[in-house]
Length: 261
Image 1 (tube, rainbow, N blue to C red):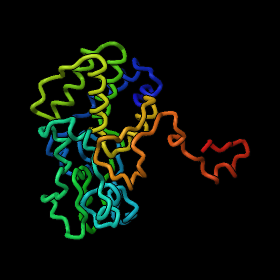
Image 2 (cartoon, rainbow, N blue to C red):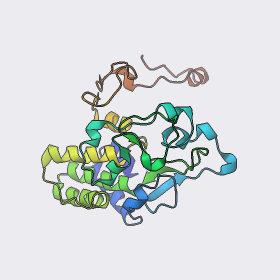
Image 3 (cartoon, helix red, strand yellow):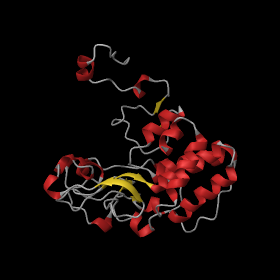
Image 4 (cartoon, rainbow, N blue to C red):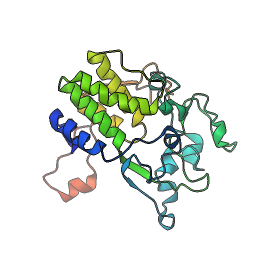
């Protein structure tokens, strides 16, 4: 409900519902943050899924695509890399940067020699092992509720209260954090940056850009021009933001019209 209210710009309800949830869960420790995001018993997880070993989809599992250690061609050749502009926006004392290796070598993981090494790859997600893609998948964490409440309170003109909420999350991620020194829109951008790094890899960025009407801007970051077809910016009105409706749906529903492309 908090998520939906935020999208609807019903900030009073978004703040209320997010606050109501916060008291029922605790934020994870920094040690737990670096443990691989693969255990649904984590105290911060509100909702997730555990994959049973006898029901594994092997290369179809989440960690077969997003982890840093499973032995799949996707992970060996195309490990997931964090935007350097985002990485550099936070200090190295922030645990959320500590799951990203600026060298790409990941010496603590002892990766096999056939794994490609690229700078700023993430090891936020870890599979059970190189031979098993098993790992629980987070759908909703209480950290998101802190971010929703902080954003909603700011939109309600309650910046001081918003900072108090976001400071709690920041201190849990960075023990050196002392407080926010910006205000107004500059502080609001800090909320959005925190959403990006906290929820990185969990499926939020596309939808945040959509709901905020913001363009995708990858200029000045560590992107391979060939891989992204030299597309560094996409305006919010661009049809690239619009998904094509599956043919099966159109065939089943004569009233359904295809989205423009």
